[in-house]
Structure formats: C-alpha cells, structure tokens
Image 1 (cartoon, rainbow, N blue to C red):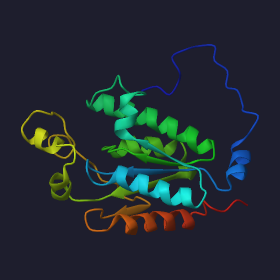
Image 2 (cartoon, helix red, strand yellow):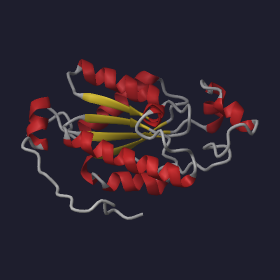
Image 3 (cartoon, one colour):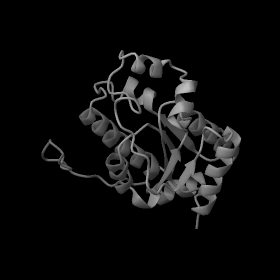
Image 4 (cartoon, one colour):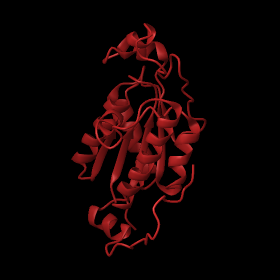
Length: 204
C-alpha cells in the first residue's frame, strides 16, 4: 500500500501552535499508549481506568476504542485481513494527530497483527508505548461480555481473532500485563509507572 495520497496538488500546512506549545499548555508530553490483546482481555476497561486516573492528575487524555471507531470513522470496514490493516492504518494516523496535540492518547484495539502495530509505531516511534493485555484465550472466552466468542464457536461469526483468525502477541511491548490475573487497579498502577519512566509528566 502506497504512503502517497491519491489526490494531487496538496500542500502541507504547518500549524501556528506547535506540539511543544500544546505540551506546555497541558503540562505533560503527548504520547500514544497502544493497548492490544484478544477480545475481552480488558483493553477498553484498562484504557478507561487509566483515563480516570490521569484525569485526577489533571492530565489531558482521550480513549480511542475499537468498537466506537468502527461505528463512525471506520464504518466502511469489515474484518477481512485487508480491512483490519486499513482499520489500524487509519487509527495509527489519528493516534499520531492526538499525540501531536499534546494528548495522552489511549487506544484500545485488538490489532492482531504485529506488522500493523509496527506500522502504527513507526508513525511516531518516539511517542508510542505498546501495552499487551495478555489474558489467556480461556479467560477471555469465559468473560465473553458481548457473547461473541460463543457466536464464533458456533460459526455465526467468521474470521474471529483467537478462534479462526490469528492473534500475534507483541514480541517486545513496553509493558505486558496478565489481565486475567492482575486487578484493574494493579494494571493502572503499572501503566502510570510506565508513563513516569518515560517522563511523560515532565515538561523540560
């Protein structure tokens, strides 16, 4: 897939207010925390819990949730391999914009393929933190809050990640959390520690 836009005669316009300006305004650096894992592994739950913890710290954060994005921005995409790639490409570009706006951007997407996550990382390699919500398939299936594992097992849903479509876990994420064992609070603390380690809360 080409990185060049299809349209011609485009000119990139630099914004008058820079990322550095916005980070100073917010009082912290912009960053994308990319939560990945199987369906029901706790990605959205953890992303939202972290957003609450950051809000209490007066940190500007926003959650980009997989289902929410597919309702509107990516409503034209299904779950074929090609559509999954395009879904993550669009999200990666949007996440980069949130980071440039000086936000702590919390993305919660299955994003099953390593190559797609690497593509998203390369859009902002200095501001991308991958967090693997590493609950086992059996744990995720036992939760099944949407009833979709059952539908996948019964053949109603095709190409479902973990059942008849692959999930490729990260090789070297910045953080790996067994969300089938650890409490939400423990996971939130670990993510906040990660942000501290990367000096996200420090504006030089």
